[in-house]
Amino acid sequence: MLTLEPVLAALALLAATAVQAAPDRVCGRWLTEDKQGTVHVYFEADGKLAGRIVAGSGPNERDDKNPDPAQRGRPLLGLKLMQGFSRDGDGWRGGEIYDPDEGKTYQATARLSDKDANRLLLRGYVGVPMFGRTEEWTREPAPAGDPCRDPGAG
Image (cartoon, rainbow, N blue to C red; front, side):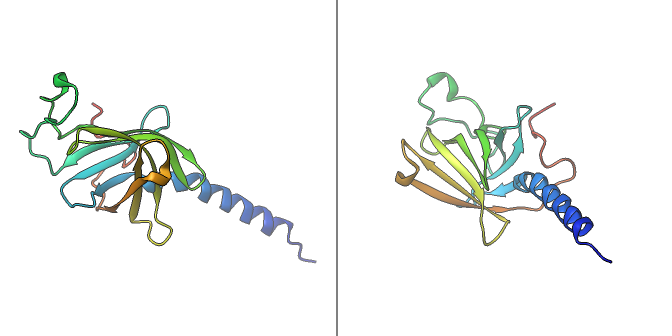
């Protein structure tokens, strides 16, 4: 007689594996909505999601709109502009994102689009997410190597 217990156990194991692998899908290179830059999204050592500018900013472009005069000379290329995102259900919360075009930092959430896992939805806001703005980034082909590793790490 065939029992369903082994089949159900196998399905449960498969589902658990899929859930554990899902956070890694956000790692990699993302073209910003305005198509002006590429951000490499990765996990920091503490497991928090972060992102660094890896293309689109020339070596001479500086963070000249930063409110801190001491930071205005730093290059945009290599700048960490996303940090502190913790996994929360199907997305990431509790992070912040820096907008070098405005020199402002916003609280933020991030999640992959329900319709297309090659779209990353970032919502920046002040105070309450309801009063924010969502940007949609598009996945770029992954370069060789670990897409979840910080490209700025030595």
